[in-house]
Length: 133
View 1 (cartoon, helix red, strand yellow):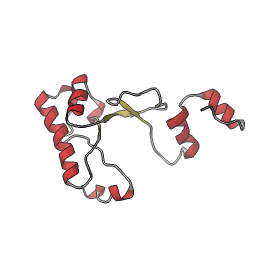
View 2 (spheres, one colour):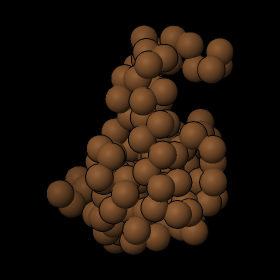
View 3 (cartoon, one colour):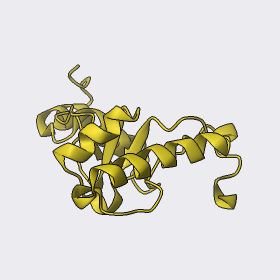
């Protein structure tokens, strides 16, 4: 908790990862509800606001856990893996992530967040043409 102090003031959102970090795909209905709701309540109680999203522990989830997360107020859930292309994944219960590190630069972030593997668009951009919208 100490490591998270001041995160909201720095513009960072603290998301839920459940209370016990149990694999939710195999959790009972009661454990699902408790783990998901208690985590949100604890984040809010500690001053981080209501967590609108969750990262699935171990990347494991099920249709039941997606519904349970929505039932207690989560609007989105992140998968554990990092993906090079995000734009085709629109299911809020299965949000793919893109890695964030300084080695990419702005062009790398634009690639991951906006164009993905649109190779023709990137070749045009590298040749001085405007990227397709």
